[in-house]
Length: 285
Image 1 (tube, one colour):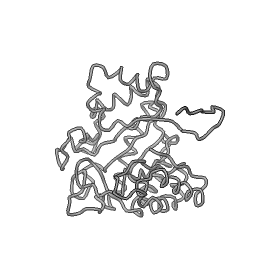
Image 2 (cartoon, rainbow, N blue to C red):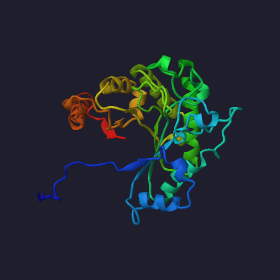
Image 3 (cartoon, rainbow, N blue to C red):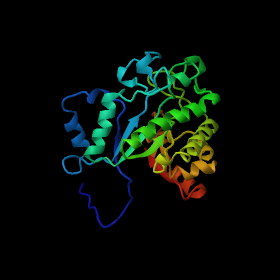
């Protein structure tokens, strides 16, 4: 079948395409051909010209060895040291790939966290114990410390001249996260409160004036997106730091055909957003 495409018709627009450094950059960043790989990904003249690089700010499971994470590439280093300071020589391979991507043409870096640093979690691990499934691993008393840690790291990379455009403190909060990788569950209300604290503290840091929040990175377009969105956008300070709601487009298939129609769920969510929050975009992050 021959398809005729009218290039004069604009069907949709994209902010850009990108790639996440999880879970390969810790490995590839140590290879001899690492520069060539980055060039092929991010160069606009010698590669495919990806625009965005997502860097994972780790929780420290690689430092401690704690938790049920079999794949070593899904363990990450934390920049926090035992004396409360920072060691930015850590995670060297992944940091190198982020900087190389920026040098090759990436003009948008998204910093994201799967879990708070282990020091701040309830069980001292970067994921929940199975007996505590679907409960948050971050105590309310540690919200402020988590905010400070991520913003300190963000400010460090901004001051290094990297084009950090977004900070995403929460990743796929609906899941239970009891192993396999770093992760943290949050209820809609918990996620909304934590994001509002990030927004409030970011307003106090002039160096972060050009950084927006990204969230809440829902892991499934079918479940609870409206609940998280309502809690996220009811905070005025968050609205000032958030120009779109970010979701992930993949999900687990179930043996019910209409439940696997990804496009239909995305369209329904877009209609909901147009009705309730017409000034807020939707991004597949």
